[in-house]
Image (cartoon, rainbow, N blue to C red; front, side, top):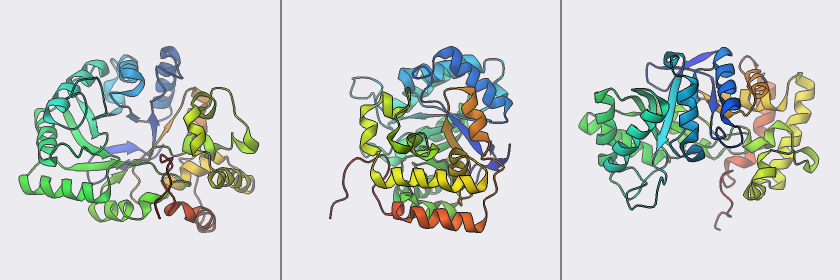
Length: 325
């Protein structure tokens, strides 16, 4: 395994992380715990979750899996999405953050969170309020570092400016959707993160399986996202499907897999600290780990860049709407 600094922090994280939004859902508790332990045995230290994943089961399973082994991992979780029907059961207010951090700590069976991330920008709460609340968690020792998720470059810049002005803890990372078929962050967010030394943590690095080659020829494997989530089909546009098949073709000349190539491409991109990829069985951990030491030549990187350049300007992978003209 290789390790990198998380942005401008002193924290080192495995270049391959583990996403856990399927734990307690598509993967039952026993399977999830086996996957978590196998990941750590493979050198993966960065474990990413959120308070809402599988209705809190993901955090609960992670807490059980690492009870007595807390120092083996870097635990990252998130706050901000809807957790109930009340008027204050979502967002980035001091009220919601303080309530939810305690719940996450209980479920994770720990007294600190390594990276606490705001799940999405909250236009209804002043950033000053959010950042003061997060700074309190850092100074109290309940949180080590703070990050953002799904923030635009201007939202991050405004956050850093406020933290600088008031002497508050600063975001050290941002978590956006990013893959060979979802490159929109290269327009503004990547240059910003390079300038401010903010670590990028891509999610959906395999575009829900499109970049693994498993959907080639319209195949719909049982248990896949396409099989289980009818809404996922909206993201299976012909251009992305074609890239998935082309990636498979390229790997035949490189002696690797589409999964490894797609993850390795992200690991070669500037400002990327760790790439979080989900797994519902141990064999997927082994398949993902092949990317860690896969060195890509300039020729291969140029080929992939040319093949997917259109996705710098296309609507994001998570978007199902059309860009307005």
